[in-house]
Image (tube, rainbow, N blue to C red; front, side):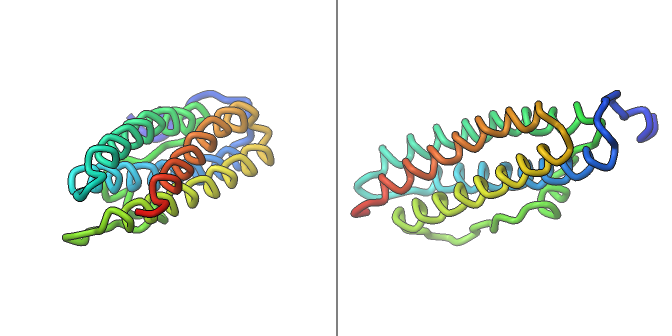
Length: 163
């Protein structure tokens, strides 16, 4: 099988879909990075709000992971290729990892909130690229992902008040 065998038929212009695919692959990489960071914080949170944060981080991680397949499939539907490995993710991600041995719950909330807000900005860039490419399907579906990331950021902000 060759790369040409992976070309999915589409009526969208190749150059335009490449721009959209690049934006989507960046968001996909950041989604995986954010998923793993959220799970890391889920596993390592401690303190008086342990149960609430532990459950919230797990719910948010599941929501983030659920979007990854949709993002990757959208890339493929436009006739492009998507990420292939952890290394590929690290080459495309813009969010920073957190390998610290200890992170306070307040810092976890703030870091995840900021990362979700950065993801919102990336989703808006995907929407702009999709609009430019005439890719109304991507343009429409990215709105749901943006709303989900905004809601996660809001919950993290509210949970962090007084934390």
